[in-house]
Amino acid sequence: MRRADGGERRRPGKSEPPSGPLTRLYHAVPAVLMARRNLSRNRIRSALAALGIVIGVLAIASLGIFGTTLRAGTAAQLGDIGNEISVTPNQQAGVRNLTDRDVADIRRVAEGVVVPVESDTVTIERGRTRSIVAAYGIENPAALYEATDGRVPDRLRRGVLVGSAIGDRFDLVAGNTIAIDGRTYRVTAVLQEQSGITLLNPNNAVVVPPGAIPGDTYSQVVVRAATGAAANRSAESIRETLNRREDRVTVFELGTITQSINEVFGIINTFLIGVGSISLVVAGVSILNVMLMSTIERRQEIGVLRAVGVHRQQVMRMILAEAGLLGVIGGVIGSLLAIAVGMGLNQYVLQDPLATFSPTNLLYIVLAVGFALLTSLLSGLYPAWKAANEPPVEALRK
Amino acid sequence: MSIIELEDVWKVYDAGGERVEALRGIDFAVEPGEFVAVMGPSGSGKSTMLNVIGLLDSPTEGTVRIDGRDVTDLTDEEMTVERKRSIGFVFQSFYLIPSLSALENVELPTLFDHDHDSRGRAVDLLERVGLGDRLEHRPDQLSGGQKQRVAIARALVNGPRLLLADEPTGNLDRATGKEILEEFQLFKEEDDVAIVAVTHDPQVSRFVDRTVNLIDGRMESEGAWADA
Picture (cartoon, rainbow over the protein chains, first blue to last red):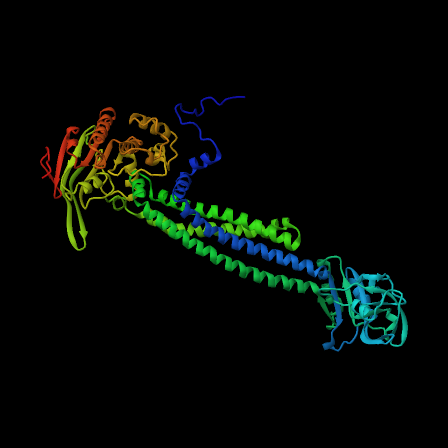
């Protein structure tokens, strides 16, 4: 090890180096030391001023987190419908049905399983019960549905799948027979009840082999992609391919519904956060009040500071540090509380308390604390300016 | 050369449309190591004069010099710097900051500087005024005399050559007041600090080199002034 000779040497008799991070902070920013001491003089008053900030930050951050949770919860309810798109003939352009050629085009450009659907209305009959229901002719229903009883075959050649509501009404299990438009079919499976939004709700319908429905055109084609993005790309390609010359088909993406739901939640969230911000502004007013009172009480002290050679800006910095400290303390406590509230909420709604620490939520917390700090500093500005500009002679007058 | 010099200083206020002449042509000078008492009845302009000497207030007319430099028309910023460098203040009500320890109060004038020697100087000064064992005491744990000693140490921490005292014994009993005046004398002799004390206290005159009397904003002939 080599010591740089002739370099700066510490003068003897210097005070001992400051120890501890807090001492070092005070040493670097004496205004913070003064601010802390001044705030602890009237603890209750300072605590109440900080409480306003706590409430404001808690309001903003927890409402933000609430919105995120709500969105996540809804997305979970909606499930993977964002992966599905539906292609239907554009009736307005006079297109009644989709042809095999359309289906082939769709198969060529779509990423995912393509399910062409023929539709009809049929009469079903079992014993004395009869009913008119929708029938879907689907060759590969396993791509869309699951069964509660029996098995959904990859290729539906014979037999019929019945929706859950029909299964209940006709008291059907797999293996029963049922008459559809006078022809007898064996029930291959009873389908799971579909809740929420689906493109082709099977609850009140029967799924039959495509051959059972007259004609060889399709009323719609469902595409199920692996991801929402893939569904979106498929929708684009299908539009480009099939609608190149005329608007033959309408492509409906469930993803757009989720998107608009997200947008609605975004608006609700912004509104809630706006309401929360009002409480922070009120907190700012209370800080303004507290700081104004305490600077008036300390008028003479500030006069002394000015008399012994403390500059205006230094006085100002000191008082701004007080206001800022109130903001920081309130902000930290408020965000801790908001995290606690968020964890409780996420445990309840999503069964995942750690969802609170998503980037969006952290952004809300940072935003709330930042806003709190800004509000506090703005509120401290006038009292600080007033105190700093009071002539010391006036302040020290007996 | 005089530490401080007032030359034909006038201070005129406009108090509610009425012209108040607080100082009327004051000529005054203090030499290094001199202890001067300014006496006079209430409203005679003593405090105004102290404020002008202390660069807390500027005169309406006339010239103020510190060490021969004209400081009459300094900006607030420059006056603050000059106060810090050249002048110490001691007040009747001590004006210590209640949330700070004795030591921190003494360090107060240096608080916002990155002055690493100030701690040592502050400890020295407190030891010299006999409070070496009370460095960490808060003002409310100190007696009146002790508070005024802390205030004296605070006034001297930047090594000024002029100490201004506004009724320094005004809030103290006679015996304690005497101790404080002895403290002043000590610093005057050991550090060559010039002291100007505005006072009503007759016992001050026993400690000072000279007394000036102020009546209605004018300096009267030097000598003992007696309360009417």
